[in-house]
Length: 120
Image (tube, rainbow, N blue to C red; front, side, top):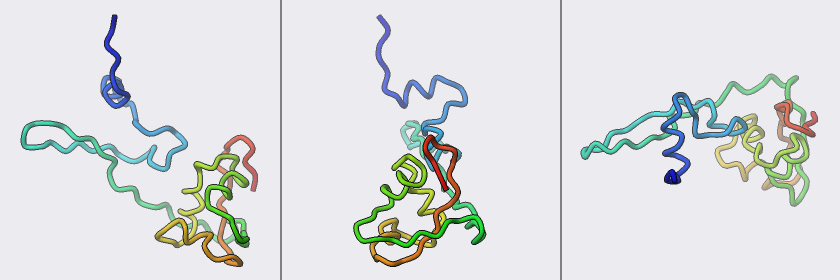
């Protein structure tokens, strides 16, 4: 019987395999390899540069209500709470919690990424 390999090891055996799912913000990030002095290879995602912020016409303004969170907004607008990072990328914040920590703040919601149930 074949030995079960960890997910990362199994991916190493597939040429061109990427460790991040297509819906991940890191899917298109380049994978680097760092070699330790003992020869061990450590794989890592190289720096991810943010895409340019969309023009004002391309984002939907959303006024934050008390109790909202980035993941809940992503569920509402894209049908997937894991896509909160798209909202964070479209707004000039360092910490995603800044998006919703102040009721009444207006943030930009980017166009839906084609996820089931996504809407603009």
